Image (cartoon, rainbow, N blue to C red):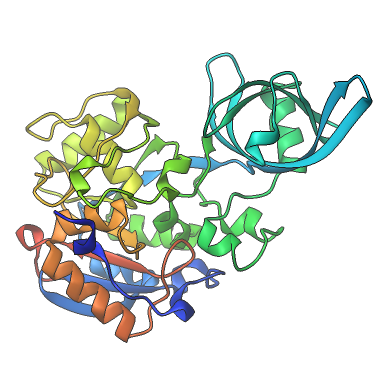
Length: 358
């Protein structure tokens, strides 16, 4: 497989820089096998069956983009310069690995002042990132970060406008619980309390898992040979209760439908060869490409992904490359909004394709 197999032309005006409101008003392209239907996210209760189970990623995005002043003491006195950082991964000792601009200007021992309540010291600097030790931890750190930080919007949005106060709400799911992600599980941004209640009333069950989405989700595939690409590891957890719920649904004949590629990658990482799940905690760098045999996933709700991205490869694995190309061609022709703040799709591969309620 070549990288060019996953390329397509996207008109720039279809890149969404703000979500629609209310959240379930987003459009939903339903691909049930080869059949395509234009619907809305609010129609999900009529599109799913009683006994189906949605798998939701309850990670919480941290406002991990910070601007600060780098301070360095030298013979001439104190040198001060601006620096922008993005938190990308917590470390066991409480420090954070960060992306920094300009990275080459940082040195071990530099102090960085982000606000009156948030200071850090550079303890390591590599070729691609640095390590910061902050002066606060736990709830005090969380409160100071919420005050000084900005939501880490994807590059294709950040290049068009800066993050603002509205993103603090828009770029967070309504069921976000466990802080640690540097990007949102964006398919889940379409849900609100009313839609969740309607799904439960329909008999659709829901299970929460946690995968802290990392900065690697934004990194491009650079090798033309797709198999040479290596994914960045992300931390995830499936509780014993969550595993039992998913196993019970499968045993009863219900469908397992992850909401977002992050939830899908987590349950596929944890599943045994027969699709059975057990409690699981760890890091996953699973890379799903065409030819992968899905163990537990029956369908997927997801947004529309970037050309040449690992996520486009994942949905191509689920639906088939030709079928996904037709789905994306239809989405572009019909004016669907793309990427994190865009519209959604419900992808049901032929093996699971069936008639749905009108």
